[in-house]
Each structure stands twice: as structure tokens, then as C-alpha cells.
Image (cartoon, rainbow, N blue to C red):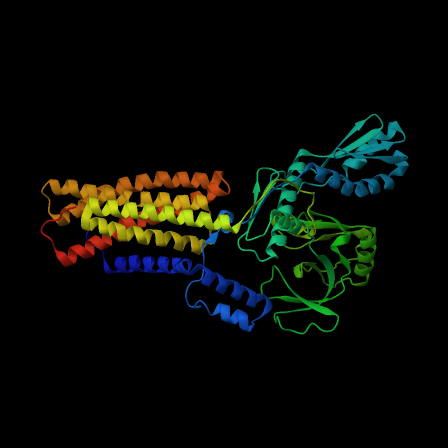
Length: 553
């Protein structure tokens, strides 16, 4: 156990150096943060003397990743939005009515006259003038049903139809409601994320909670009302004729044209006519669907004015490309295979079902599908965040000093080795947090404090085993070797059980609970590494140089 080969020593040292290098920027947080902001601004808007000066405040050859500070540490705005998903069913039935109307109108000779009574509680009601023709009308309306675009409901259709006397009632199936709920939540998350990302705030937290709620936390934002106003803005969706495409970001678009980047095609830019054919204001609906060969596709529908403009354009430009632009980025550029009258069409391509759903979400990302209800809102001031950071710093320092003193008084020289490993351990935790871009919150600091207390457990187990082996009159080398060997299983078992707990907390929890679980889990990994390898490396190097005939732990 005392034999550590040269390549193992090199790997241990390299791991320590890399981990501490990744953690280093956090010691110079304001300077590195200003550097990162300047670099990001130059990528978007180009260089300026002020930005170049800010970027030069931190060497570009050094890592610049930081541990992001959460809302409770930086201050900012917090919202919990609840989406009334039932309102979406009403809109879906409004979108289905034109197809039902066309089907009934084309078969008026079989069913006679009919009229829509209205849409209430997510149900479309249609009265058939001749009650005897209701069965035929039911079959006609059922033919309008389409498969549910969901992997969990492959054999289900989107609508169910029933009759009450002379009234036909059309409603969404349970499978379609579930798929609609999922698409609505994805769409809302996408819209909110795009709106908030435009502001350039650092590491906002936007995550789904439960079936119909979205948690939104934006560090550094002035107030919750500002965040609500930000979410309420509208995305800019438009459809443009394509002039050409290029891999050169500096290519001249020409008078009356614009140059927009592609989202899916890395390094590709589209030259488009500046004036769109239609805009997102004319888009009524967009849903994942299937093409004539059964492959995933995306169907869309415009209102009457937008449909007329789109129909004329597609009739005059068959074979040409047109670009779907969202917030000055091309999300898709399909080819017009034929004229698309009536204001509806389908986008086909080599989509998977998930990709077609995502594209449909992006197409509808101009506005939230339903008006959110904010059930919780609060603003955390930066002063409170500073107080939280100071309290967390004091807690870490007190815990750190207490553990260092205890280990030195209890184990002497070996305790010093454990203390050095503990310092490295904390550095490695921050290095990993910086590497993965994790967000540190107050519960996360609690996880680090707990890790500091737990980090020496493995060393205590090893040192106590060495003490026991020395009492049996074994030599120092043999006692150290057996101490590490016999303590290893206990170290692994204890840390695995705690790590499983951290994983469960991360999977089942949300928000602060996840922050605690992340720091606890990473702390366990670094603690095991420092106890099994780093501390042992110190002991081996010390023993090789001192060659003591007796040791006292």
C-alpha cells in the first residue's frame, strides 16, 4: 500500500493542479466576472476600448469559469407562475373547428344543414338540423381526428366525438390533453427562457415544478414586477423569402436584405428579404403532426389575412426556400413544394418526433399560450444577498478552523497531512462547481460546511486503524499499509450510502434541495479522492524521506 508508482503520483498531482486551477478564479470573483462579461459583449457587439480593458483584467490563458451565485446570495427576483392549462383546450377546439366545418360542408348532401352552437368548457357543440343524420355526421367528424403526436400515445387520436340528441359534441381525448399539457409547458418554458436570456442576466433559474407551475429566479434583477413585465413581452416571428446562404458572417446582404444566423446549422447565415411575407401575428396555431408517409412533421395555420398572403406567395414561388425567423435567427428554411392555399401548411424534413415537437414549440414561441397566474413573487435585495454570503463565509471558516485544530491535536503530523488534504478538498469542490457551471445557494453552502465535517471521516478511520496495528507490535510501514487496506471498505461503504442519499435528493428535490445535493455529492467524491490518494501520497513521501523506526499517530 506504501508503494505508489511514478505515473500514479503524476496523475494525483495533475488532478490537484487542474482542480485548484479551476477553483482559482473564484478568489478574484469581481475581476473575473468583469472579464467574462466583457468577452461575451465583444462576441455580440464587437470590441471597444472599454471592453478590451475589462477583458484584460484577467489572463485569457487561465480558466475563467465561476461558481454562479444563486438568488439568495446575489439578490434578484423570484416568481412562481401557474399556467391554467384548461384554457389551452378551449383554444385547441377553436383551431379544430375549421377542419370540422370543412368536412361537414363537403358532405352537406348527406347530413343537411348544421350550425355551431359554441365552445364551452373545452367542448365544441354542433347542432344537426335533421336528427336522423346524426350518425353520418358523427362518422364525418370522427374522420377529422389525427394521431396524437406523443410517444406515450401512439395509437390514440386527438379528438373524441359523441352525440346528445341532435347535438354533436367534440372534445379532446385524455391522451391529447396530456400531450397538449406537455407541449404547453415546454412552449412556456421556451418563451420565458428566450425572453429572460435577452436581458443578459447571469444564470437564471427557469424550471418546471409539478404539473402546471414554472419557477423563475433571475439574480441581479431589480424587482419581481420588472421580471413580470419582461415575461410578458412578445417574441418576433416572421416568414421571409430566402435570397441565399453563406458561411461568411461578414458577407454583404445587399440593399433591402438582412443576414440572419441559423440555429441548427453551425456557422451558416441566411440572406433574406428584409420585408417578411407574413409575421407571427398572423400565425394562429402550430402543432406536431405526421406527413403523408407517416414521418414526423409540423403543421401550421395562419388567420385569413395571413393565409391569403402566404397562399399568393407560395403559388408564385414553388421550388424556392422560405425562412422561418424567430428573434432574428433562422429556425428552419423549408422548400415550397407546392402552393399552400387556405393559410395552412406542413413543414417536412428529417425530423424525429422530439424535433418536430420542438420546432412546433419554437413556431408558437411568439407569446405565452395562456396568461400565467403568479401565485408567489418576491424580491431579494443585494444587501440581503451580501449578508448571506458573509454568514456562509463565517460558517465555513468556523467549521474549517474547528476541524483543522481537532485533527492536529488528535493525530499530530498525520493530522497536518489530513488538514492539507482538507484544504485541497474544498478547492476541488469549487473547481468542480466552476467546471459544470453550478449555481451556489445558501443550502449549497450548508452542503459544503457538512462536507468539511465529513471530509476527515475517512482519514480518522485510516489513522485509527494504523493505531490499532501499531499496538500489535507491527512495524511502521506494515501498520500504515494495513491501516489503509483495512479501512478502505468502511470508507467506500459509508460514502456510497451518503452519495446515494445525495442522488435521491437531487432527483426528487428541486431548487434549494438540489443545490444542497450537488455540493454534498461533489464533496463526497472529492473527499474520497483526497483521503484515499492525496493523504496517502503525503504519508508515503514523508515516510520515504524520514524512514522512522517508530511512529506515533
